[in-house]
Length: 501
Ligand code: ZN
Image (cartoon, rainbow, N blue to C red; front, top):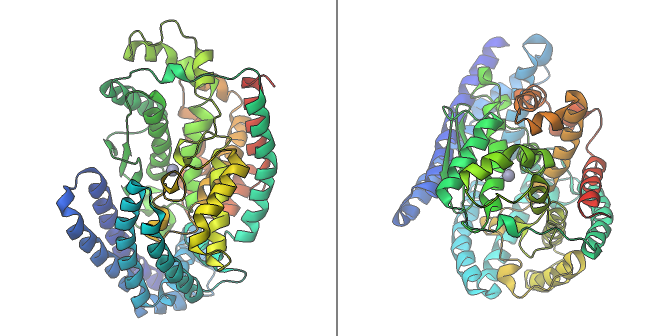
């Protein structure tokens, strides 16, 4: 059995190497690629994707997995071996079910749709994008049918990003969230004392923002010998290898928060990638267990730490040095309140902690309706308007600030949005547990000592990689299954105090 397993690992490493090369090409595309190189880059990436698909569908891999099926690998080899086989089997089962021509059609439709989406967004014209979305929804329905599902097609797509998650389960979580968040938002909007974020909207030179951001990232524990920070239009993290993690950010000179919170967010993603078990590099067990868990790491640093009172207490003296004259007469308390203004926005990526998940609820409701054929593409702008009015109390002026704002659908990515909310929920639940376990976390943050928190995250989450499925990991770390309660309590405690309710 050990020989079979060794052969399986060898095959896997090749797949992971190809995936790493593909990740490097993606990073390069966003950071360095000259505009005329886009078409050839798309071809190179498609060639690699086809190779990866071929390797996963290789009958030899199927035979090796069959030979290992039924064995108690956890006992006979190691828990990591059991996780590797579980993850490989999941990937392969999915890949072999999707016909090769459907993969090609999706890739082609996606690249056409992306171009159309960019134009449609720039011209604020839904009709330019609608036929492409219709085509993509049709192809994704075919993909869901090919992959198979128990309850509804959305599950088949969601499972790719959040293994094991089901729409019905998310429905219950999201309904509970909506019931808590909408009234909280109403109370915050009606509060007589409203915090003001003008002091974060002064002029901040981007070089100074870059230097400050790097200091914060180093304080968090990011090792720049194993990571890079660059700039791109939309911040993101790409893990090429466990000791080669790339993050990007974006600085806006009239808003300190844009870049700083992006640094913290991507820094959280990077710390997760850097903390995966190095001794298993190249194996599925040494990769992130789900997008929801990945997002929990970014949100924990961005919000639970970066938007905490103690964070601003610690960094105020440094901010005065990096940005002379900007914060001389300002106290940490004002900064803390400025970093926590709740203001419904039409744009998801500009949303605060309270309203963010309402944007996700809206998207998931529409995606599910489209996949179930209950909603037609032509109805999306109208439904979007209604839902934004209901959830956020805002009027949508046009599709660019509505359903055209996000790039996801133009890639044919459906079922991805809910992982953002799962990340927020996991983050709050992990953070509550870390506070209990560490005892004096606020005092540590106030002292700028993040090492105990990073140590806790490393031991409980990062080092575990994909050893346990996300739901089990959550139960093991926190003692309870995923719930909305810790998140809602965190928000209520924090914002009732800030808004003096
Ligand atoms: Zn993220």
